[in-house]
Image (cartoon, rainbow, N blue to C red; front, side, top):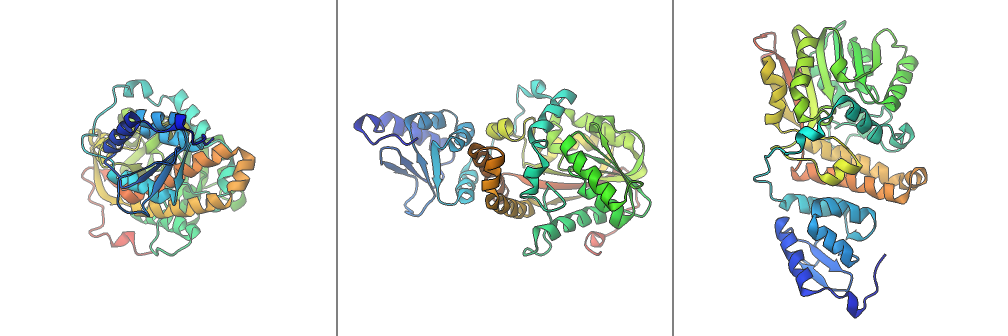
Length: 400
């Protein structure tokens, strides 16, 4: 709650000094900071610049101590408020954050390894909170990964179909080919491959909520003989396939598990097989935002391209094509955030107002991160080394 503007609540010079140092550590973003006693500290001459209101001294001290974590905590608790557009505010912050010298591994990484029990707990935390919640703001196929907008004005539903077609064309799927999918979400891509490319798909997932939805879709579409959804971890994939695909799952694997992930690809692909990995990433190695890691995606770590090579290099896979779709993800998140806001009242009834603020900040922050270049979206197409059965141009990726 806002504290009364009494003399005892005035901001001291030492607090202002610490606040200034905090802003310097964030790269001095051009923001205005309004304090609970009516004072304002500005890092810009622009009176219409983004403004954040800090409502009490305790919130200020927490922000000074660890702004990357406590910004989320204090926003959720309503002890700070953003006056203006939340996405624009967060993009301003991200664009000024120092990024050099961040390519370091954490000393705690071995203790945060995504073992099988941890992977199950992490999935329960995020993906198994209820299909009814995700139905409120995803498209009708429940695709929870970056869409693809050949036309920037197209609807989200059409852009998600375009994304799935873009992936299938890159993989040059042929009728009758076998596909294994590591992490399948609510099953949209597996169903799309079977329905529109006559592929036979086996998809692995450990989210019970997602699998329940996916299996119902298989029954409704009459695809029981073409699509099989298996409740199991990617590490337990068995069999050989023409194609390996993983969309939106690698960021949950953990970089210390990448060699094992590559070994799974190695044993799963037939001679002449090929694959595609689609994942959120970064320009250089960096730890996940601690607030996001705690409240939204425990165990997640978006990789840099150098980290991703730990999947390919030990097993002599050749990278055939790399595409960065980060602005497409920013556009996807714009749609998701608007749909989420339209359903905020219903979300509050399902959970509580603090949950609404948490997910609002997460979705807005993700949109800002992709807009600012803090986050990337990589699609990496690969095949076995020395396989010359590849097109001579990229035309096949764009011609239906």
